Each structure stands twice: as C-alpha cells, then as structure tokens.
Length: 189
Image 1 (cartoon, one colour):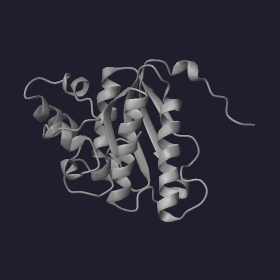
Image 2 (tube, helix red, strand yellow):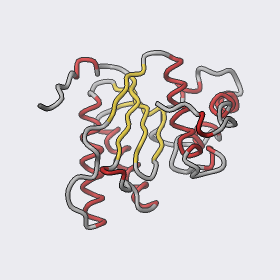
Image 3 (cartoon, helix red, strand yellow):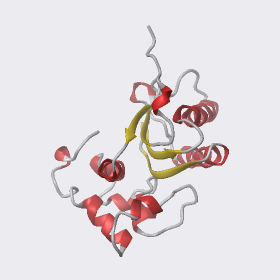
C-alpha cells in the first residue's frame, strides 16, 4: 500500500529538502549537470516563488533549505526533479528513474533548527571530504553567504539576520565551530 501524503502540513513553512539519486548513483556527472540543476532551480523559483536559504549539490544527492509561500513543496520539487531527470537522461542517454522515490522534506519550525540545518547543509562537502574548507565548495550556498557574493536564487537575509555584524564572519564562525571535531562526530540529520 502506498504511503499516504498529508500535504496540509506543508503550507507556508520552511523545509529541509533532500533528493537522492536512485541506488546512490551520480546525480551529476560534471559541472554542466550542476549548472543545469541550478538553472532549473532558478526557473522553478520564478514560476513557483519560494525563498532558497541554503543549497548544496553533492555527487549523489541535493540539499535545499526552502521557504514556501504560495506553493507546496511537492509542486516545487516535482518541477525541479522532473525537469532535471529529463535533462540528465537525455544528455547521458539513460532511461528510467533518476531519483530515489519521493524527496525527503523535514519541516523547520524553530530558529535553532533553521541554523543547525543550514550548518549541516554547508558542512556536507567538508564531511564528505570533497574540500578542505567548506567555503571552497563551489556547488553550495556557503561561499555566497560567507564571502558576501551575489547569487540571484539565494535569499541571505533570514540566515544572516540571526547574527550580529560582521554578519558573514559570525555566520562562518557559527557554521564552522563544529568543523574541527572528528568528521565522524559531526551531526547528521
């Protein structure tokens, strides 16, 4: 029997979204795939407005921290995942499913949960040993937040507003204070 969906909880809220590749295969073969995913994300944001507070594109999964307004996450994620899977399968001559079932969506209801989820998302490449410094990972919102770079799809105000000036530096300190622990001890969601 299929899982029942209760979309009533998904009205006007912030969610940690995770989409994984089927069988942990690669979602992204190269930078062109990641660029295309971000383009689809931007186009979907224009069609179904939402605030993107954080993102991280890993080899076999994607993290998004989104705040929905007029459209439920299922509408947004269906658009993103369908368009990206169609692109990926065409480009790489694949057939069938790309994503591992339905995406995971966790409601974020407190400031503490919001900030800790942001930290988790941004430390993901570091924890996976993809980079030595989290801010060097190009396919994450983290460098845009800590280096005050422009990213048209990223809404930085909510994240940085929880810190005193200098906002970017204090956000970086908060995010990386756990980084120096053993990578195995970093929190996982």
